[in-house]
Length: 333
Image 1 (cartoon, helix red, strand yellow):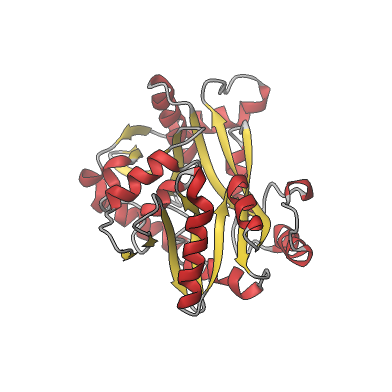
Image 2: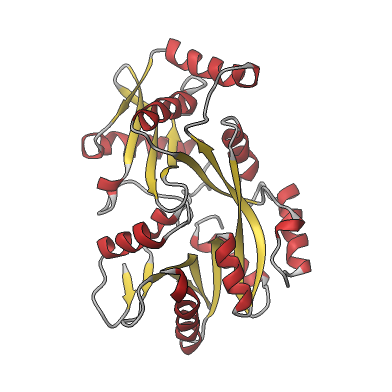
């Protein structure tokens, strides 16, 4: 963890800022290991970023009270420029996108996030026949789902992670930055559901807390055994949904998927035309860069009630180099 500030900052203080001021469903990813934090002593809030080449790649907007976000962004941009860097920000919400556009950034929609209203959620009816069948098939194969203590299962899940990565091919790398992680100081705030066959993990899903106007949980890091029966992930998520609903949780979020949910009507004023065309080209042909189609297919099974546009912003003009930096720090290149 790197901190650029004149005062003390801890992960817990960052988490409290997220809890108080974030309306980004993926905000908890700000606590991932490897992130850097920018703060200033006279403003409440934090900017989360990673340096990469000539850029500072920022995650989300400034996590701060509404009235100071523009000023905190201006201070962060000045900090970047003093270091000879440009800023590229990813996973901005609509309100953030407008602030960045007003501050002279080039801003474009780059994807969407998806969320289910748990009070309205149901798997009854013909629309969900395939989902119900997959869950039933997994359970008939002997799968049981438990909410697990991470410390107890960490070693076994690390083995599962390694097997999952090998199944993706020799050049596969685990994504980071825009996905969560297991372990570390923030682990006590997460929830972990594990699917077991004969007492051995066949898959798991880690859920992170979501704050703001749609509070609940984020379906975050997930892994499954390649040789496991179909329906493992669906059965695990269904068990988690049952638990969350019983507790009165409001929303289950499925997170950001690049190159999906694109709509020209959602662009902010002044959006880059060439960059919008590039994003739509990647939506059609970008599977080699990011597995958006596979992710969207899984999320769509749950019939999301909310599709929230997310944006990328560039200090100055939109640039391909800055965009590639996002994928670089995410370990996608």
